[in-house]
Image (tube, rainbow, N blue to C red; front, side, top):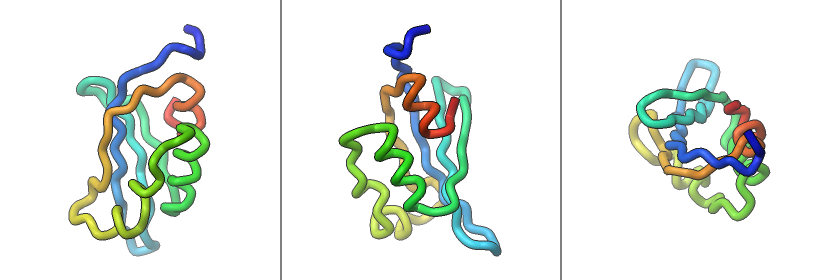
Length: 93
């Protein structure tokens, strides 16, 4: 499979609140099946991963004002076209 192959994936960010603090889980779904996940200890590290993997990604979608004020654990979901390199950068491969 060449690196130019792209996959249509539903990307979900889940806020996880524990006694030790808040962390962020990035999940990738293809159809109805979860394909993988990666955990981030901070919102900044999650934003940095997206900035590296997806040039031009609107980082305001990951601002504390945007994500930390939402109720419930699911704070972001979007359909994205990602290739193998991008999945690797996001630690989803």
